Length: 292
Image (cartoon, rainbow, N blue to C red; front, side):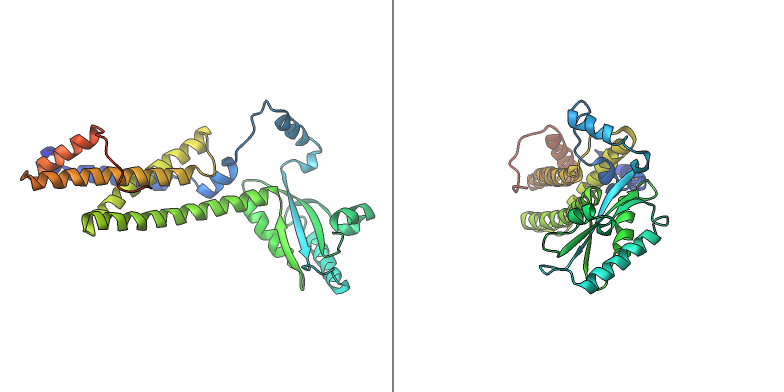
């Protein structure tokens, strides 16, 4: 322990290097969740086989994502002027097919069959179906943003939806939830540790150590997913944050309590630290300080 105290700077520098590598090498989590975070059915199932067969139907549709533009007038039927504006929007989208890599589109004006399927019975809603090329350089996020801007129609409410768009929205909401969870957890832990130890310094050290473990763990898992197809879901990052903040804080409370008890018995800080770490490392059972 005295050796560690004498050369603690190397331990600090080592962890700084680890954290820097973790931050610099971590993949884009939003893209990772969108690409590999969906729960998939095994390839042996009939539904998966049917989907794979469907992907082979028509080369023009391969590598595309279905996007639906919704034109809506609330509970009232679309007026003649609104339908005129919708037609102008559809023509504008047709004129930009190449620019936005739209492979095909189906509008209500194409045929009476299409009209019966794309216009609601109460005439308040009209749909426009698009098949847009999707690639690493033309992601679902960029497609959603481009089509949303392109589909804006004067005097009509417009929405953009689709399977991939919904998945992307769910991924974005999950990432936003993770960020909120991290902030709430940090504030909650700081308050709990401040009430327990009556010191503003102890909570900061605890959050620092737990934060290092969270960043490192997320980076390791993300790289395993990105490079080796490690199992992954939308909630993996949330679980990592919750588990490490909970267990890490409880472990810190154990160490700080043991350290404080030994100081109260008259032991010097080096001996107290060594014995506290020994007890913590030995896994002595303890009651969590809070139900995280």
